[in-house]
Length: 230
Image (cartoon, rainbow, N blue to C red; front, side, top):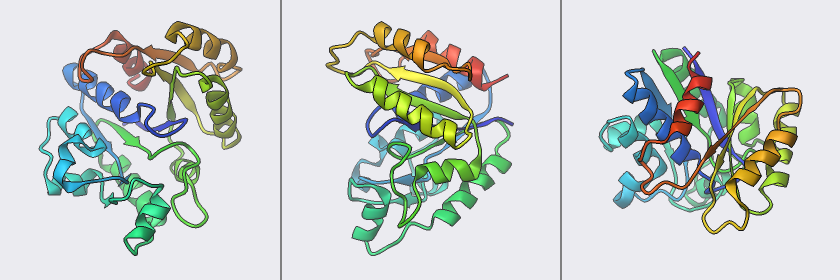
């Protein structure tokens, strides 16, 4: 069954928003779907329901319990830092090999579509020598790249695409989330990325505007689902 890695050009771009929206759309179509957010930083048990993993669990229709959090997000750290620093603050070291094994096991066990959400951007450090890119390369899954519509996003996105291309990763879609307070129109960002971001890879560019509520449905999720479930 299909599995995808959801990454982004940076932190707080919209990975969880996109992953949760896609989950809700697939479930509404009666299609099996599951998700993993293996590592989180800035996690507060008192507000677990509002954490990235909590948002994904609610989209999946599952309880935000410690058992479920352990299932989809076993590495959780309190400090809002890159995983290597957040783990060090607690006297730990993130076991990247174990996290890769956890991800591969989820891929093997999931009956339907599996979405693995990364942490931060594609080059966020995980330990002393490895980044999210190394995690993605080890899994070799197709990638959904989430970016924003803020001023500067074109350069950030094209740089990310160059890095992903160099790693020979299949970027299945670029998902542009409408950035709050952006001085650039969402349509202009999408048009530019369609001109510069497709190249020879034929990558689809999908725009998702700001929604009144983050869990509202939008036709863009149907477009994204069409690329995921084939």
